[in-house]
Image 1 (cartoon, rainbow, N blue to C red):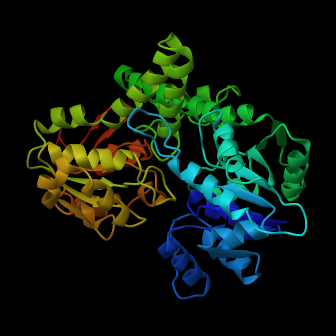
Image 2 (image 1 turned 30 degrees about the horizontal axis):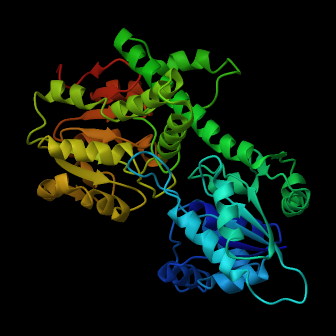
Length: 463
């Protein structure tokens, strides 16, 4: 089947490559010319990186490009004309009031409608699939925009994505479930044909109404976000009581009703959980007013923001003051195996340390470009940026550091060379924001160790 995917971000590029991998003919479209040039140059062997970092994606893209099942263009008119199914996979960032900014979705819907106005000997019928994360009832907005610009036949389908950055390729090739929202039998039949190869892999395809499908995405992410905040609350309490959350967790996880977001950390970030919960708060306020469930959703966000700063009062108590201290920060993405730094705990930690007078040496395995750009947008940080440096390797960030914050659970950080760390650091102190370091190693090598869900361990400062 011929498919057009509008938008080549995480969702569009990965989903487009996955469709090509099951033998569909996919044209990925983006209005940013530089991004399309980048993608084509990668496929032609003129560069070795993609615009986004995602494990196994380079292989998937290159293989399907070479098999002529995947192509990239800025020409939306040709892509729409040749496609039976057109996916909208553009960003929906939050407005200041928490509502979803649908500008990109609306613009793409308008572009698709105009592109559908071509002459044909046979009746024109397109299926427009909204893959972007949008508030409930957005399918009506897309439908009305397209209907206002073309008399040709079409249906709008809601098909939310459930990709996790760092494992997006796996999630696309073997998704946990496929949600298809439509009330039209013809559209449902075409979508079933489109996803038939995934059904052969025993993936569940669920058909429901558009509004049901749109709600599934928000409900899923809000449940998961709530679990992260509740987990961190339990981990914080465990540490205060002298319990080890990792040990407590062994018992909790035996209950099959409890999900997988039960590991303590510095809160959730990225492009999904924070944005989706805020947008659901905005939607709920419109329909339900100031209710208890609305206050509960707000509390999830408040707890998460507080969790990102959980180390700061403990650091100030330990050092007396952070003024003039040099602190290393390992990890600035919101999770491992991605270069996405949106709402990351690592960037939050860097910002707060700089504002408190500390110098920061950071290291990010995916590179520093995205982190530096994000930090440069904060006007409050501009007078302090001279006290920030990014190292080329994880140990380079430790030279003369009086502590290191582990903000992301990259594998390189799980079992570092502790002897080398101790030689490089001015004071061997670890603030483990992911509880990934074995406390026995901290005792053996004489580190002071602070974590989220475990009691503090003071070995260095007592000697």
